[in-house]
Image (tube, rainbow, N blue to C red):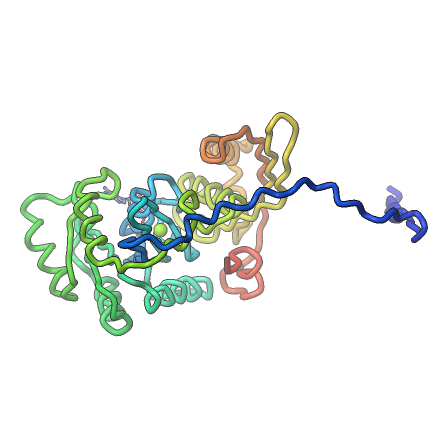
Length: 334
Ligand SMILES: Nc1nc2c(ncn2[C@@H]2O[C@H](COP(=O)(O)OP(=O)(O)O)[C@@H](O)[C@H]2O)c(=O)[nH]1
Ligand SMILES: [Mg+2]
């Protein structure tokens, strides 16, 4: 087949260019009143750390009141530093979601641990989230040591998953976690059910310093809609695959276009590390990819408040998690 030649760009001579006329109507001045410090207003960064799967992201979504960070039963779902902002007329808490602290096995894992560690020195307080339904393991000890070393701010121990904790384990498990690191305060909660949310909030507010709001009150996260869409697609891919596939998944939104009648068109590529993973993700007659696409579309339509046409592609990038250049492409830093 003959290769189609690219059309040359239209030539424009200087004479043809009209001087630009200012046609933009006066722009409304932005409402910056939220920046004004109000007496007694409290604000601060709360770094949320803990081992993978402890429920850090679930807890942040609970406080923010909307999903701002994805959740799955797979360890290491959170790869970036994601902020979830909770604003009221009296205070603003900026929750810093961090990848779970763990011994990294690849370069991406190292980047994730670095994100989590970097959140610590800047934090006004630290929420150390543990899975209280299990006794502490070596990962919890590793985190307790890191907190002892790196953190001067108050540490609140959040004993999560109390809904899965049998009554006879409450005292021994609590004591075992308290023995790792004496926190400034602790609370048993269930992030999925919302148990003790208000009590934990009181502990946070007691330790939150006075300060100005850092974000406008209607801003819930630091993520652009485009990045968040990629995250939601990744979450649906994680929830619909098993074993080794999920860890090597990355999603890039390649196209994002407004279409007529408030329709949004998104084309995204799901990257995997192996051909076999690609066929698992696509599934028999494309069924798995279709399910992932439907679930992502439904949720994004709800979150973005508009109709969506979502097109998904799957591509292989071998061992991308060990390749610094590909990590930059697929999991860029903010
Ligand atoms: N039973 C129970 N499960 C929870 C609770 N909080 C989180 N989970 C589940 O634990 C898994 C990991 O949650 P996630 O928030 O992604 O953990 P992260 O890795 O620490 O961010 C998900 O399947 C959550 O639904 C809880 O309070 N109780
Ligand atoms: Mg997470």
